[in-house]
Image (tube, rainbow, N blue to C red; front, side, top):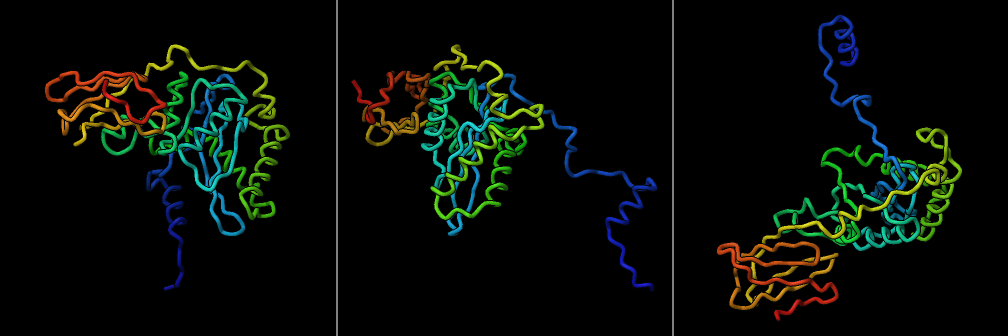
Length: 293
């Protein structure tokens, strides 16, 4: 009858102190995570994109390529919307300046990979970045769904960058935003010692060791299997490097379910039911329609 209200957290703490309950933490303690760091610059590049709103209320998306070993921000740029084409373009810009990495690490967003796309067709197709990486022998790594800490370095960088941007005069255009991003990246790479880097700057860490390179043994050797059906005109479609191609099979095979065995540019089309080899070709990436010869 004292009208005293006790917070549930206080009750829980008292019960814990007297051994009446067993704590069951909902989150894993930070000490349980295994910290990973690439041993060389260019061994692994992490990438991700984040949203940032302009003073006008317009939304933008900022993509980052970050060296895992040194935390060097290799490329950071703002766009109205990030697409698979922009991801590939920014990657190529970055490799032109810093050389090619041995591997990349991203989440499973569709602009980075189509591995988790619905159905067999999505699982066995490649977007522009995936095709480019395979062509140059660069290993592509993707985080396990539900484990965001895998790409923690680039996500932490984006958080730091956005906190810095919020303390600046709000940009009104995407060009203004890019100027502020450039300023932050310059300071971050060259002027800000990083505690996890032994109080060195990312630029110092990046230049301290030789650079890793793609493994030539993985060049163009990734194979895929694709399940499809020949359409009523005798054609199957196939996406390579982000571009759709039409492969002529022939009207006699219309509506036939097929298996496409793909090894780089080499393609074999097999009848699912009989196992008959219907067509074998070397894809010409410059041509949309691959004519039956």
